[in-house]
Image 1 (cartoon, rainbow, N blue to C red):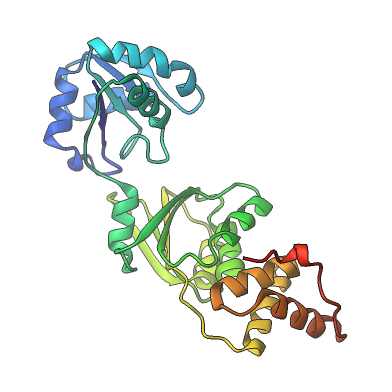
Image 2 (cartoon, helix red, strand yellow; image 1 turned 90 degrees about the vertical axis):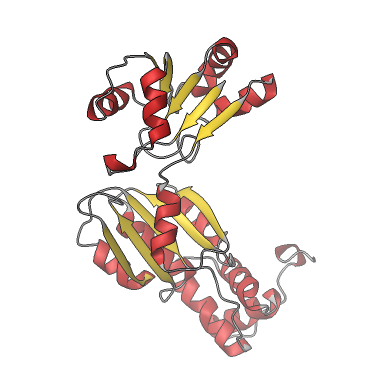
Length: 287
């Protein structure tokens, strides 16, 4: 059997009784970083020293089959450095291989940065989506955010403190400067901080420098009721932020229900001061 075990995301007191029992009796543990696992065992006062196997992003695909075969005869405890394995951490490919091979997969539930950040954010929790880490590069990050312009559910992201300001700036440009955002820093730790505001406000705050583990929670899009003039204004704001006119028109159309072609032509006319020609039909496929 493969057992996915959630570990504390900060506060050691969040280690569950089931986790302690599993670590006390485990004979084989696959962990994201074996050094972190050794530290966890010592911190919890557990004298058991199971066989430790390194399982991380760079070797998981190659080791999955071997570990699945091992798990046919021996319970294999799987740990990430913090939180639940497979959630933006190693484990998914292992579980996928185990399911295909008919090996049982179980879990010891526990701490989750995603759910903790969502719960304390004050944003709607009835429907949400976890988007993992945003891309490192500006262009790719903007592209990812553009795909989420019309997302109505609350969104949760992980982010590096070194890229937080840049990501919040891009978020303000693409999703709107007034979009409600919550930055959760160092959850469950002594210096835990929950910072709430608009995307623009938090981008300015983050520019001063932020440290620690970061979760970003973003309010979903509200269905906008815009007339064409307001829609064109929104398109031009996006264009000023570096988004191509055709893409900006599509984004505003998705969020407002206004026609893409009408937005494109009107924004082009407003931008150039000339009446535009009809764009190529392939730019705006029907449907």
